[in-house]
Length: 201
Image 1: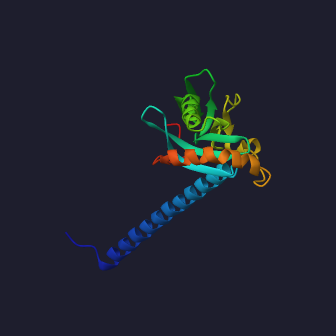
Image 2: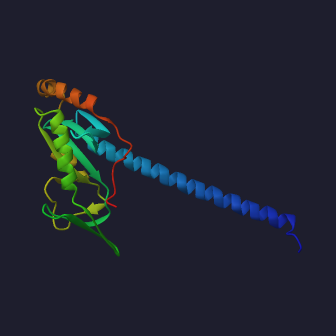
Image 3: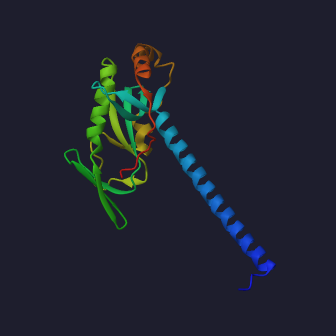
């Protein structure tokens, strides 16, 4: 069998190298894009609070822990944020065990996030019973709720309107009162390897 001439081999090697470089640049571009998106989402959440903790494990009082995406110390007290990245039209309700997603030709369900949210709020409240605490499942702009938002559910774009940034100096008296409980929470939690936001599947 005749071997390929040197010029052909050199051309093939060039094509393979070019294809590899293009693939590498594409992967790098995707990584940078995803990183910027994560940073923008993190800023959108954390800008609502004076202090925050991200991706932490909270003791559940039964010898185990619960993952929490964000804990925000805001002008209204502590907010537990369960950040969700679900693409498509989402149909959910307070009494529904499963919420449905329809995206293009795909249709699937995921567990009602309110149940897990209640557990996380209860775990945090056990650490700081005197601190006002509320929880919200926050969805990124990838998803839409055509029938309206269920209770304790917010869109990421509206989070800042719900918890507007307040002047720290104006809130100094309230923050001074809340800070001991916040420090208790800081000491009680540990880093979590789970990253946010979570997809529904």
